[in-house]
Image (tube, rainbow, N blue to C red; front, side, top):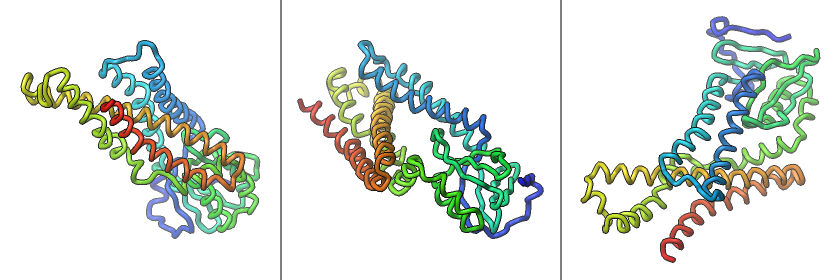
Length: 299
């Protein structure tokens, strides 16, 4: 039996929980929408990178590049994020109950009535779980959580059937656990990785552009004034930030594909392989890119 409370009905209840985690509790249709948007946004980055590097006539206008980036990546990514925010939930495991608390209501399910926990076969917009009741019905919400194993283990510890863990013997779960163990660190912070680090290519290339186009490091400033000089620098900065996002997307795609292949072929090696892949992609990004720029500028 599934019990549903409204936000008003649960006000004032603050029972201690054995386990609590933040999650997203989608309805099936909204999960499909969020997944489609996420796939479009990430695929858009790879398509844009291919267009810029392989096309005979790549878009060279920086404003066209910015519009493509906004349409192919920013817009669908933000839409997927807003959907996730709308379905944000707190998952609580109490003694004998699973509580899914969203902004408007709480769904409460006896743990003894849950027959299976099944990871999403297609992990989009991220990894998540569906749950099957002993009655044969499915829980109407699909739970997106960073660590499905921790959630299921907490449910078993609180009284759910141990068989719930059977559904987690899947490469996707091993893949997710390895990613959680060696997931994004400080070097993966978007502000550092794309906004600040984009100054590394921007400053020397913009300086070279000033010498070529205006005859000196501050040629545009002396010719057109500070405002135009700063606008020009900002355009170059944005252009290189977009390039870094595209390159990072390609690195990330390779890391995730190889990491999943290892998790599927040799689950015991998934965590170690993830660590090696993450270190390699950070070395390529933070050392390889500046080195490539230096070699091209000094060739």
